Amino acid sequence: MNCLDYRRVLLSGEAENRAMKEHRLQCPPCAAVLAENAQFERELRRAVEVPVPPQVEQRLATAVVSRRRRFLAAAAIGALAVGAGGYSWLSRPDAIALDCIEFVLMEEAKSILKGSMTRPEAETALAPTLPLARIGRIGEVRHIGPCPFNGQNAYHVIVEVPQGKVTLLVMPEGSAAGRAKREGLYASVVPLRSGSVGVIGADAAVVDSVAGALRSSRA
Amino acid sequence: MRFDDLVRVHAADLYRYAFWLTREPRQAEDVVQEALLRSWRAFPQLRDPAAAKAWLFSIVRNEFYRAIAKNGPPLENVDDLELSDESASPPGLEMREALTRLPPSYAEPLALQVLGGFSCAEIAAMMGITEGAAMTRLTRARQALKRVVAPDGARERKGGRL
Image 1 (tube, rainbow over the protein chains, first blue to last red):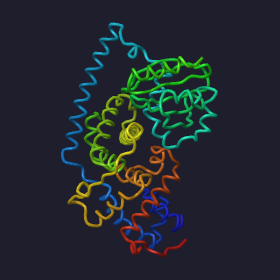
Image 2 (image 1 turned 90 degrees about the vertical axis):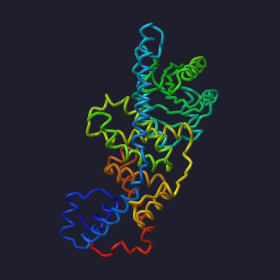
Image 3 (image 1 turned 135 degrees about the vertical axis):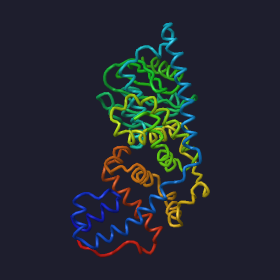
Image 4 (image 1 turned 180 degrees about the vertical axis):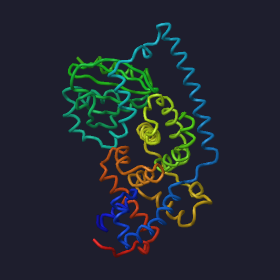
């Protein structure tokens, strides 16, 4: 390691590794840079550690406990409904629909950050499976991007409908179907003439409505 | 470790991280609250307790971007009163004000590094960027802050060998 490498890593804030330490021990200028940098890093830490509002931890704990209780109560009512054979969202979930929910929970943010396709690109890519014009009849398209999903090159679409946001996962290959509910999200996977589409949202009625619209327009 | 213990240990830093994402104390609290509820539901599936901190930070991040997708980007409303505290020295305050002016793409990895102690590789994985890009953003963020805090470059020692 030379001085340039040492200072490059130091300026990124990455912790000093063995090679860096060895260099610093035999390079007084770099040792001096480290000492000077320590003061900057202390100031940086103080700056990043914004004051936490009074009682915020207590408020968070109280709010989370209260919402947990409501969640558990709702789950208990749901379990009763299942016992009565009444609520199809709480029946055994399908793997593909669960994967759709998992995508929204864990991957959606990253996918958005990767950026949207241009409209002409999206029109070409989606045409064989679910034409963009058909999605546009459901609501306003906010994001379209390619995403690896379910072992294929799928497309991640976010649509603003009057009742809120729904996510579509357009899968060009295979013909899948299923439903699932998890973590407060609902997913319905609908087979299309070619491929299938997963509809994911926080409102069961909206997911059903969008899935129904896509299903009825597949012919 | 119990979920409640995990929250007690990390709540303050999760709030601070959410603050640097939202730049607004009330929204930061809302984001953390939603994230904690979501993480409580998923907690039984957390297999590696050592990964709990990164897991919680990731859920806060996801929750923030979910809120953006639903409500649009947050309105910046950084109140000086909210940013000041007695523990921050004048240089610390100057640096904090400079931090608020950093683009989110630079401030976020910095917050993850300083608050979470995450490496460039971990930050890259959390943000969905390459390790090199994470390192570049962290470096540029520090360079920008150093320019503000010490505009004459007095803190940057010249010399050394290549």
